[in-house]
Every structure is written in C-alpha cells, then in structure tokens.
Length: 563
Picture (cartoon, rainbow, N blue to C red):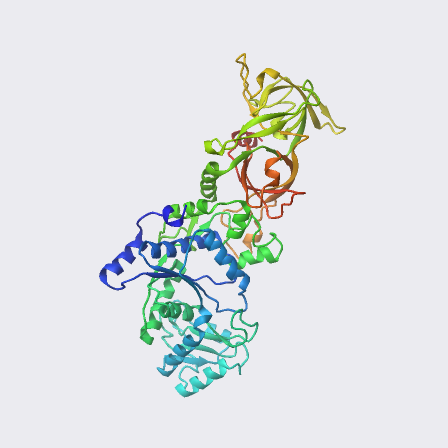
C-alpha cells in the first residue's frame, strides 16, 4: 500500500496548506525532504518524510529531495544512496534531487548582500567568547567588539575566509540582528564557519567556508520556491530567523509549519547516540536488526506498510509528550507489523530449540508427505508437502517430564497432535549423565493421519515439528529490544547503562526444507513461534533467519508469571 493510502485525510498541516492556497498566499505547493547525509534514516524520519510527500501529492504539487550537505566532516556519498533507497522503499517519489552544495555560490552572493547592507559581519571572537557573550534567559548578550567593522573590511575578510587564508575556527560570519533579543537564535547567529578538511563529498576542496544550517536551509527553500517547510517542533524557535533572512534579502518567503517529531520507547533516535552504538561495537553496524534505522528494520523483516500504518496512526500533533516529541509505543508498532505479516507471510515449521522424539512404532524406512496450508488468511497461497518420518524434532518447551498445572503439551502418558500429521503419546524418556532429557520416545496412532481421530477422541494440544532426516539446520537470531529502560534517551551516558544483555541470542535450529533455500528478505511465519526473515548473511550451506516479531504466546506468559 502506498503512503497516501495510510494517512488520515485531514489535520492541522493540511488545513494550513489549504488556507494558504485559498487566500492566495501561494498558488502551488512544493515541499522538500532535507536530510543531512551523515547517517541512515530511522523510523523517526518516516513521519517527516510522509508529511512532506503527502502534502505535495495531495495538492498536485511537487516534492524535492534536497540533501543538506553543509558539513563535510560528517557526510558521505554512501549515506546519500542509502537515504534514497530507503525513501523509495517507503513508496516516496520526488521530482528531482538537489543538494545544498548546488547553491553554495548563490548562497555566498546573498551573504555578501547582507554584509553590504550592514546586516552581517566577520567576528574574530573565539568560540568560547561567543558562547560567553550570548547572555542568558534573563540577561541580554554582549555585542562583539568586531560587530561594527566597516562594510569594506567585512567584505575583504569574508573573501579571504572563502579563499582559505585563515585557519579553522579563527573567524565566523554572523548576522547582525539583536544581542538583546529574547530568542537566542536571533542573537547574531553564525552564518559561515571555516572548514579546510576533509574535502566535501561533492565539491572537493573548492570551498573553505561552509554555511550553518539556519543560513543554508531557509535560503535554499527560497531558491527552490518551496512553499511549505514542514519540520519538527525543535525548529519552532528558529522560525523567526527562518523568516528574517528572506525578509532582509527581499526574496521568496516560504512558510514554516512545525509538528511533534516521532520517538519510540525503548529506543534512541539521536544520530550521535546511534553512531556511538555502531562505533563502540554495541551493535554490528547501522543495519543491525536491533537498530531503529530503516536499513535495520528492513533487514529484520519489517514491511514498509507496517511502518507507514504505524506512523500514520500516530497523527501529526503539535503537542509533544516529552521534550523531544511524541513517543510511540513499540508494542503498538509490533502489533501493526503482526497484522500485516499475518496476511502476507507463508507458514512454515521450524524448531529453534530442538528436542528429539523417536516414534517407536513408526516404520523405520517410511517417509510420508503431509499436506500443509501455506497461509490460512490467503486461500490462494495453496498448500505444500512436508516430509514426515520416524524421528522428528519438537520444541523443548513443548515437553515437560513433570508437567505443571494446566500444561497440556507432551509429557509421559499424555497424547498430543503433531500438526498436519498424527496423534502421538509419550511412553518414556532418555536422559544424559546430568539428568537432562535428551530423547523422548512415543507411539503414534496410524488412524489419526491428518490430525484427526476417527473415534472422536480429543487432544488438548497441537505442536509443530520437523522431520529429523529432512530438516535443514539453520542459524536463528532471536532479537529483543536493545534497551531495558523505557526512555533510554534520558541523560548523556544513560542509554549505554541500560543495554539489554539478552537483545540477541543465536540458536541452531531446524526448518522444513522449503524456506532454507529462500532469498534474503523472504518472510515466513514459523508456526507457533513468530515471524522470521532470511538474513543477508544467509548462504545455501548455512541459512540464517532473523526473528522479526514474536507471536503472542499465552502459555509462555503464564509460565513466566509463575516463576
């Protein structure tokens, strides 16, 4: 399903855009996606991307994908390509791709105009001096001693900054606004800083000064004729500056509208913190399935539809539930994912913690093919044949030598149904020297083929299985939440102190033959276990499956509660 089909038809952003068109403020709609190519998209970005895309599309307008590549120290072409790939995966389309660096020349010319108007100056203060002179919420800032330099001197210094004559950090270009302004962003904000290395990913070493975000993005919006700059609430205090620059320049004035950004509980969204997780080896890269990046979620088995449905369901509120935005419940995200996968995933049987069961009265050399349903939610998915033989594997959790109350699975003397196959009854067990059950023996009733008894007797439990001689050994990566704290964003180091030591468990299990040869990205429901996805590390010799999301298991919850 495409993004526009998952979104509510009306909200305050759409209403504001409609009012602008009706009033004649704008006679067209053009929005932009402005990601900085310094990392991978995460689920929090999806909300902003959806809003920009849908507002343009629904009004017959245009969407521009513009990369804010104004900081060469952090940006790479790799991120540019990944962002475009992830956005396409979501179903987002744009009319063209641009870069802030496309406009470096014009942006510089506009800065010169402000200098000539006496509205910008070159400041020689150190970073510490600039910070110390900003003032406080109750006290005005102090004007720089360089604030009233002559225009000619400022023009000369700015040109020499551009040509690389001065070292990094020695000078900045600042807008001349009001050091007593109650909004800190209006207290002579920086426009350009000097950066010699590393070279820019597109312009190389041509530029030695680079625009600050507040100077670049608003003017780029104006240059591209963007009508509506849709951004998260942290930019609300930047709006006066966003509007001040084009007013002084006498250029096209876009409208900025803010909304509460999306966060998830038990998750961090800060790129800086995500980078630390990668660089410090907490996770296995940006696409580690425990990460909230779209790369990682795709690898884990999430569908674009489930993410879009979840984000659309959150709405576009301007009211934040925390200082950083609206926090979504990861349990709700998983519920949305289950709903989608339940309709689309083929069913297969797998055993992730195997226990051998020998059916003593089953013929030694007999192999039968049991008819199994591929997806009960989709009759068109048809059926498949699953091999059955004398020795099968079942889940360890499906057997108890001494069963607790209300346990209806396999135990000595009890009869259960093997899904699609036969009734079996446990007769005895074999233990190792440590007293652990390593082998279960059972008998089967040949009259119950297909899972039903002709004499009408009932069993209270149906369990899954794989044939030991036909199943494929696979690696199963069982993923859980990366953090144990609901809000790991709190505190600078706090997120590293609440890591879940059990966020990844690697098991060796068995699957029926069919899924073992599936391509990376293929999704399945392993019956009674959960939804799994073939990992990119998978090979024909060693298939690898990632747990996408668990099924709801009432017994497991009861047993855990009992402990």
